[in-house]
Image: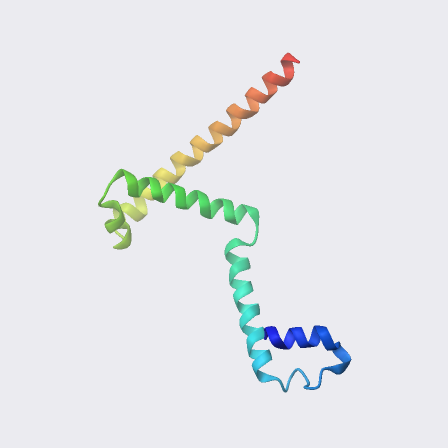
Length: 115
């Protein structure tokens, strides 16, 4: 695909000899590229999604570090871990995160007020 696109770029679109539909390898590569991009876009498409995924990864990492057996229970999809521990810790970490944002805003407001 890379060579095909490079030759198209160097010779120009008027010199492309094979119609795009007849170049099955190029079409297959292009379909694969588009499908991979769609999957990536769904997972990491915007800042909010990336932030949420990173937040969940950090929260689950806290559970893993707190209890050596936690990873085993999470991998086994233990109902106690999946239905109780993780949602409660995510809620707790969310409240902590919100509190830190509010405290930072208050500090900035006080700094600007003193000026």
